[in-house]
Length: 280
Image (cartoon, rainbow, N blue to C red):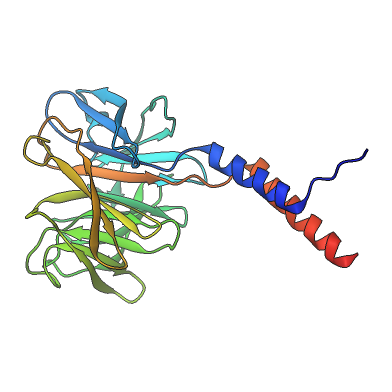
């Protein structure tokens, strides 16, 4: 007897393939002295797993961003930009080189990724949002915001393309908290406050309307990271910090995988099956 694969079955298979490509998780690090670690954190359980540890600068990120199209994790220490394919089994850091602006070396305190470019912020000299070409590491100024803001953590929500920044300043906008940064219209909108009396949160990851505030530690004084619903501006919960030492900077990125080619093919086949059925 001939068996047919239904459109629903194909869609289920495709979704199953998507779910197996990789888990969407939080990656964090800080620049603590001595040995530092870049961690993978399971956002469902709070369990932290070491991805890379060293006493040298490649293990001590100031900013971090993820490109899902190429499965590349980027991070910087000062002006030096590093990258690695993301692998839950560990990272293999590569020093890409120094970043520049107007021909001079430049550092960034936060990184995000959108439209094939890194997005960075500075909190000294010309405080602004910059775009950085990851191939050439050359930065260009996009939006110079008021120095009343102090955007250390910055990230782009891959699901919406929106850019967000954390500000430690009490004078910018509505004070310390999460701001949506509109670089096209050169505006900032307050979205959520800091919680639990926090005054120094330097790492930010955002995905699907959820923001992750990442402190720079140590976990003896800053025990938790914060999970925040951007739409309501409320705290959803916390994740335990794995940082054992105090850093000046911390960094975060959210690993949000895109469907594998096989999954996309299955989804396309499911659509064709439905189309043929309608034509008949």
